[in-house]
Length: 154
Image (cartoon, rainbow, N blue to C red; front, side, top):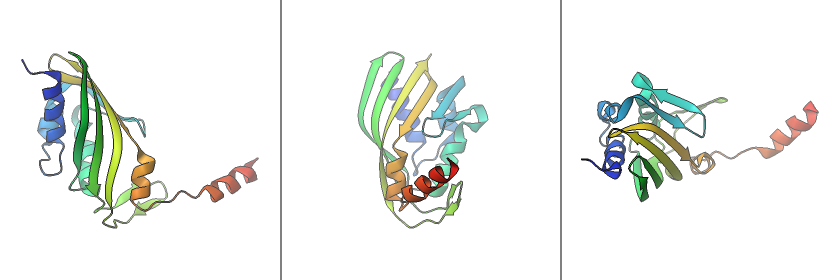
């Protein structure tokens, strides 16, 4: 029998930039399995499970997850501390327009929580520190404009 840690490690491996095994990634989930990007609330299930990875490969083709600590909490729950690393080499869509790539190296702290059922991933919740990724990509938040906009709306 495959351990919960081995199941999680295999899913991460399928999602590496040098592997890109979208079928293997999708097959690591149960039929009703769900991947949620907690920073945006976006949920992926079934055929859409590979959508976030495809987008990630377009922006960070060399994406790599450095697994710092894997904590199997029981047979069906695994918590992971990691760094999501990659080089900003592709266009990054934002609500304000597309951010052009600049070759910046990123290393984003994240925590992932997996719930497993019958040897497959039932839910995968990813908690990346997006503010750190944006800063590493060269995005500075314009707090002055936000304060000005808020006071003008009051």
